[in-house]
Length: 322
Image (tube, rainbow, N blue to C red; front, side, top):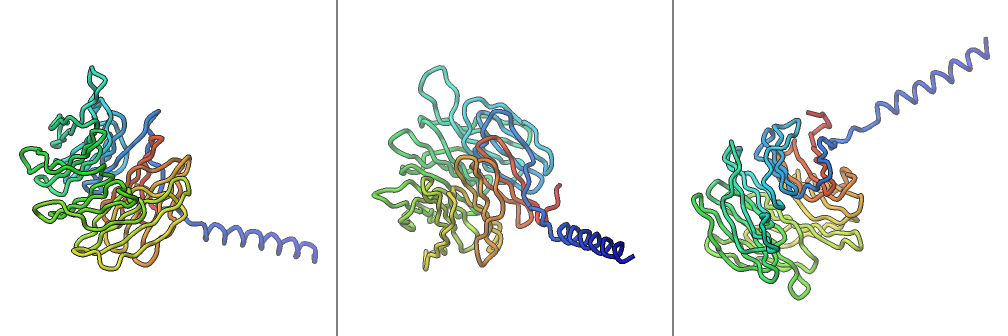
């Protein structure tokens, strides 16, 4: 009887430990939800939780909040996408031509179909950001000079010359961008309602920018070779005291739902880190199996990221899958 008692106790102990292990197991709020075969996804944008777009190559993919499907084949090479609402979505990139010289292009989705809306002499229109149906910004690059374009609700126009723009953020009437280092420093620029003006000069390379209204700007960037980044937080309408957060991963894009829900992504090789800011600190929240090239959110409970190997990852608060 004594031996049986000891075995039973051991068995109960094992069962208890297994139960404790199961109860302590955490479910990641991120998961891989879609995979494009043989392609790369370069940008992603959510108008809301039920209208999300991502692009790569010449393809546009759409999700109503769950499954994904190809929505259009626009040809060429798409670099960016931005949605202000379900019936006002823009995609940018370069158009396939019969000549060796590609041309920059912007497409528009009106809720039912995609159509070419604007073309330029740039080699690529690589970024587009929509704050409203009548306030959309885009940047192009011709190999030696950058151009900033604006859409006022009826037509696109060349607004200003620039350096090589790395990212644009628009929220309401506010617009911000980061451009490549000049003399060793990256420049954050802000649109003051009339013109683009230098706002802040960063000592480290800035690759992504987000505006968390009404008064916070986030930028990310760093060194791919050293696999490290600095995330910067500054205030608006003046930079004030700029706070640096160092992380041991290369980050390229950032998005903010509010002051306590900010995500940054990036990576090199087969590493795709996702970092999350909860209002106090940045934490490593997820690791995808590829560099993540784009990130977007639809409030504090939903976010998406897309990767260089064609995967879409989704975040649902609490880890529940849609």
